[in-house]
Length: 241
Image (tube, one colour):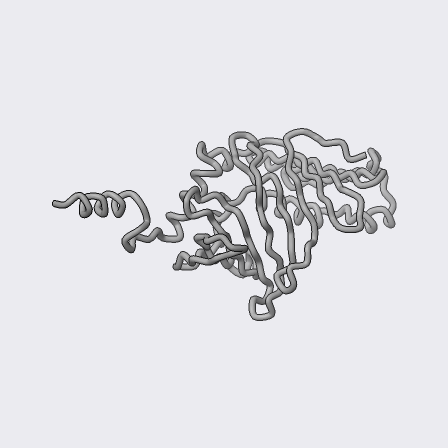
């Protein structure tokens, strides 16, 4: 057996060369192992802060508290001099505006302080900051193929995801670094033929309760690459005054 053959045998046995490919579930499992190596998400209990910067607007600071075992979610948002608090505790909703629980109908409407809106925000934050682990949730439909795509000059392994009708109607693509399986981009469409929806570029990492979460999320429209805004994650509250 020649040295060249031995080298080829070793490369094929330890990499994805020589035609060996991973299944969608294998790619997902490798990404989960990268982002949540100790399986902490299923019992996640923690707090983090997100600063949202958008063009032609002041920053918004959001304090997120999630306790999955206790079915607890709290969102405290500060923008300019307005502080809203939205809480769901085992299905019971509570709202505050600048520290007061006494709200007028106009205030409720203006700041969208409703149970429905709070549930939407809970689902939004637990989905985005629970990725890629959330792709194991019931109702998630992984395409049977791992796609290889180039995005912004970099080659990625890509998973296409749709959902059962009761869960959602959008089509999502998740882009993984083929070396580390870190999730670096995701993209969604309401109607892929119209090229609507958005893509989100992830950069940096912030470790929250043992989970590697993307620190920076930059949002763009699919159709024209228009920049929409950036979310920056932190363990402690930054000063945006």
